[in-house]
Length: 154
Image (cartoon, rainbow, N blue to C red; front, side):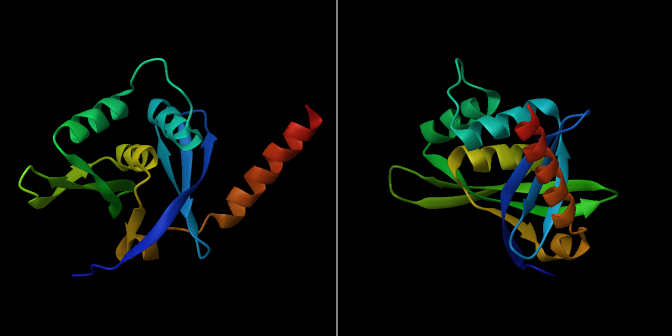
């Protein structure tokens, strides 16, 4: 079974009619995962460090993790089936006796990315998914150029 992973970063968040396009990638390739508007907004707030009046759902989860001595170690976009991405949230927890435990949970990639952005945890893509996704580097470049030219006109 293929266990290699590729490190990626969130390269851009672009609003769409149905939610938000999250562009993930590195110097080699970029691909897109579409997320709902609420999670897209949360990812954007975490990336920008925006102040929030009240805790968001992902903030609540982070507070619960901290209360039990756990944190997000990393996230992995580990599968792609019929156009749907699957993710794993990897937590590390340490108890009072300094015993460390690794916990792996099934999670939506959107929530994984939000938690990674909030906790500054690394994001990985399985080698199998990385080979399967289409490179959207050129599309991202075009969208960013269009956004910057709109900003110059306004």
